[in-house]
Length: 218
Image (tube, rainbow, N blue to C red):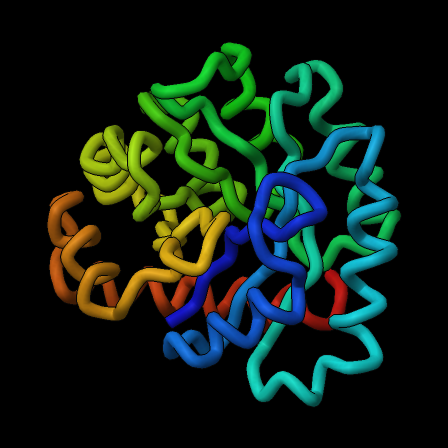
């Protein structure tokens, strides 16, 4: 299993990075990305500190760990600048907090994130056909999430991704130990979103491709 969307005490998560990594390893994950909520005020703070762990000590974890951020409630007009800011600060992966149906995310966030070429658009809610087509063209992965609330639109995201050939990944948006779901529950969430067995397997391959692309930088 791979989770490209997790949080630690550097934003609203419960665990420090080392414990999150260890718990993910024990839960059966082979790779995770630490992607704490970020804007211009804390991008450098998050990445400077997380990379102190994932850089020199990465080989001790016996799993792939990416240091990144989840750009959250960023004004759409600033998205491209903030994505570049994150990459310049050393983010191996950039996730954007998409237009989930359970939070007041600014309209236009999904499109701005896709145009800025984030790696993963998290819980994109009622994403439009135009946006999904563009995500497919730009290689931006759309997230199927196991997190309550954010998962309400999973079926919509899955159906449009299939229709227009956009890449999917399955993530937990983990904030606490219990959010690191089992392989069985992850599979059931995928099936509940309308994905086939083959599409669930492809989502894992998509996530691995992102890990491979991002772990050495860009």
